[in-house]
Length: 395
Image (cartoon, rainbow, N blue to C red; front, side):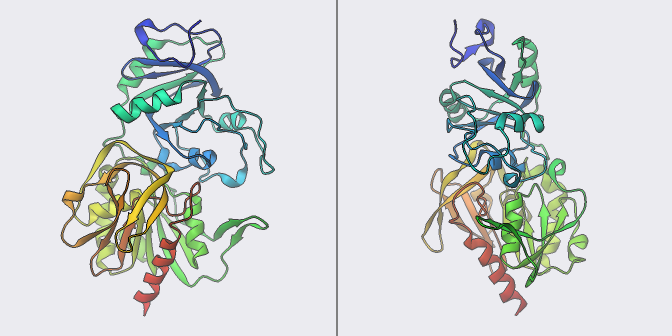
């Protein structure tokens, strides 16, 4: 019997006894395991996330559109799932890969087993493979394209799966924001969760913020509402005129998936018009990259990206180090930054650009997710910085 954790080349691969799932990478590597979630197949970029908690928030983060998530932490599913922890209505991730079988949930908030939750969202999963080996492969060679498949009878057409993995075009040049954005504008009033009362409602806002939805996580919008903002969410395709029609005090650029250069073809001209009005702007993740493009910089595809809730970032203005939650596979090219743009934050993992500010203007951004969910709350101060910027601009 062949171990289900041992990767094999497709030419020499034989299905182990009991295997009901398989991962086939574009280079021909095959990982056998136990199928989870819905039966079927799913193709995407295979990435890893290093977070120890928050797997439900991770799976529902729209920034994972087009990607199959490998969890490096082995105990995934142990606290179940619930309706409150979804970061979007419909998950955009292509599936998930786990080391260990999902155990029965052991948490007072659990409402549904993770496997049944995957089925309810038509997500394919795979357990029982050596995720450490797969993570090292991604670390050393970059994020590959791959297919995960689940069949109860364990019958798979490996050459067909390999062809599908090799034929998938990859994320570079792919505009995915249009797939995960809202279809029309709406107001958001829900505030952050608390232990005794759950989510609250913002009933007396001081500021009006228009938030571009490039794939916004719900907790980002909650943090804006919690900071005293009335939040109007607009689609990624909204024009500058659409935004200004709401007479905003500030403009927020959300997280999201895909290649910023592809999304920027229609977003960047509108951002340049909005920046020209002098209205305060705050961007995160994809919003940070799009802002950089609007200011004249360039972006590039990273080999493996940053995904997890334990990413160290240094604030170059204060010298403080914060542990951040991140999910991105593209970054801003430091060498392309114009003289009008100041770098404000830097990654302590690889030295990549993590924050920008437009000199002399109320415009700034960070590469990471300051709302966390999942992750630490070190960066929540940025929402206060945003409303303080709005207040100063109003005066």
